[in-house]
Structure formats: structure tokens, C-alpha cells
Length: 78
Image 1 (spheres, helix red, strand yellow):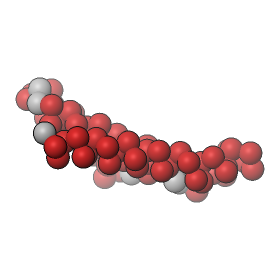
Image 2: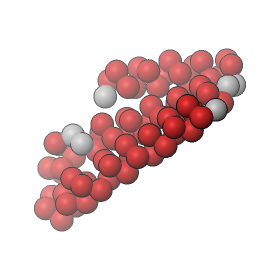
Image 3: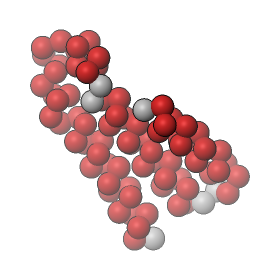
Image 4: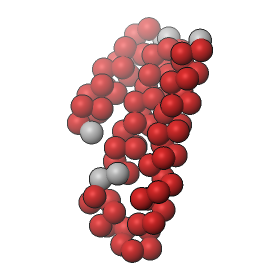
């Protein structure tokens, strides 16, 4: 997660200089990947308890990875 935060910082800085849609897409992909990494941490599952655990274990991380892959596919198509 720390490496993703670093990469996100670098690409946001680059986007502010270049204003490129490709760089913005990379920022969106990295943000989605960060949310995926954070949602799969065991401490998050422990904090949610038994009721919120089922949604996080199956649906939410896969949603973040699907969003990231859609952004990456859109960038590849450009």
C-alpha cells in the first residue's frame, strides 16, 4: 500500500504539470488499486465484525479491481 501511495503521489504531480488524460487515467487506476489493497487488509475485516465481513471478503475488493481494470483497458484503447 505504501508503494501505491508513493506512485499515486508521483503521478498526481506529473498530472498537474502535463494535464494529460493518460496520466489522469493512471491516477485513477492507482487510486482503485489502493482501495483494493486497503479493502483486503485483515485489520479492516477485524474492525467490521461478522456482519460487514461477508461483503468485504467477496464483493468490495473485486469491485475495486474491476474498476481499475476498466480504467486500464480504456487507457490501452486510447
